[in-house]
Image (cartoon, rainbow, N blue to C red):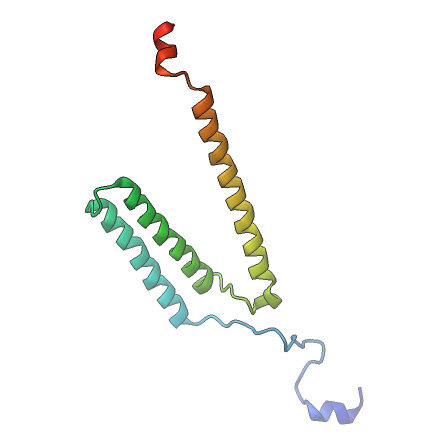
Length: 131
């Protein structure tokens, strides 16, 4: 490099440049505290819903707890795993979406198979009486 170029950027190592197109995420104590407080709230509310028997229907209770769990997963991904659409050119978010699709397909397929096995393989009451 020429002396002229060195004088324009003194003290910079030219081999250590970062891609200016990528937004770097810098974690802060405030972000971690916010994530922690949200996590505690999103844990305490479902605990209260279950222990206080707020809903008489167990299906409603399960759906509320699952809803809070989904929100808590998003809170953890944003505040603790620092995932957003800007990090690594969006590849982190793309891999997350792919993972979620695969998990949903796997869970839905497993539930479908178990339901149909239970329906078609279990003996009926009239079958049990004839044995």
